[in-house]
Amino acid sequence: QKEVEQNSGPLSVPEGAIASLNCTYSDRVSQSFFWYRQYSGKSPELIMSIYSNGDKEDGRFTAQLNKASQYVSLLIRDSQPSDSATYLCAVIPNTGNQFYFGTGTSLTVIP
Amino acid sequence: DGGITQSPKYLFRKEGQNVTLSCEQNLNHDAMYWYRQDPGQGLRLIYYSQIVNDFQKGDIAEGYSVSREKKESFPLTVTSAQKNPTAFYLCASSTGGGGYEQYFGPGTRLTVT
Image (cartoon, rainbow over the protein chains, first blue to last red):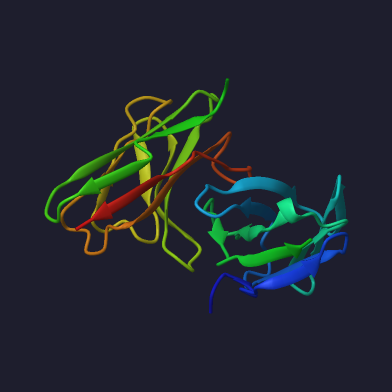
């Protein structure tokens, strides 16, 4: 079983809509969760980190963590064409210091 | 400007040759990491280092070697023993070894023919 799983997509949303990206993880006691955005041919850039159950908002982005159900999601409000990218979920299991990345979800925002 | 630099951006080598990828950071971060990314796949950890003169193998260390002689630098050597070296290589750093956000350099795209 993979440590971190994401729907590879592609996910398409119209401009101005809410994009919802989901990630599940296998280690029940994982404590640290991260969302990265990666444009084609570029390196990942950190969007948000979340450590506690509930929602964390930063501008148009909201991360949601539910440890009981072992999922973390990212909502992008008022989606823009510039949000078109691959979104990577990363988790640090409780067993160590290593990040485990999902394979990413490709998002396309249609003008 | 603080950040992570990787050089070169593109690298071409013949099969059987060793090649060293550079990674430098001026963020004063203690921990540094090397990942490999293949098309359609997530990032896979090659090696990481939490302090100078110490490093640990990641999930796919075979065919790679690293050194950490200075806090700022964490070069990766891709040896001829690595069976499929063509990939996008990413270096990252963080303030601490665990639970801390990692920040990535721009990456080196290595092609071996």
